[in-house]
Image 1 (tube, rainbow, N blue to C red):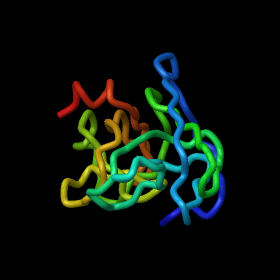
Image 2: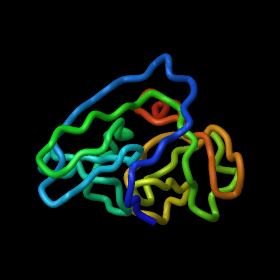
Image 3: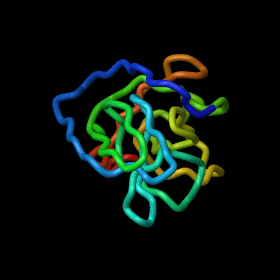
Image 4: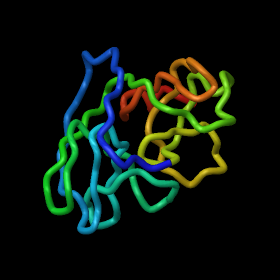
Amino acid sequence: MALSADRSLDYKNVRGQTYNSGTVKTGSTVYKGSLCCTNAAGTIVVAANTTTTRFFGIARAGAVAGATVETVNGIWALVPVKTGTTVGYTGKKVYCYDDQTVTGSLATLGPVCGVLKQLVTATTGWVAFGDAELGAAS
């Protein structure tokens, strides 16, 4: 389910964090804690189950259309995981399902965003977000 307000996330392993910024697409709103992507035009949109975007980072604050949003990568964040993502996905790439949820299923169309480090419950997990983690994952 898509975010409708800012959210706070628990973070850890933040030593390698990197920051990026970009302009929010016309007609879009980004909430703090949203999983963000870039579209073909290079503007920022919230993550969705689509092949036409690339993961950009986690929004550090909310932003409206035309404004600049700063995102962070290279961190672990405790985020919702889609039902069906099991402990068997630990150490493997995960994909954006929507602007707050990741999934291990290759059947989705969302962009790859990180690596599942630990499944905490059936619906939450620690995910390492960012390109550095993706290079070593299966």
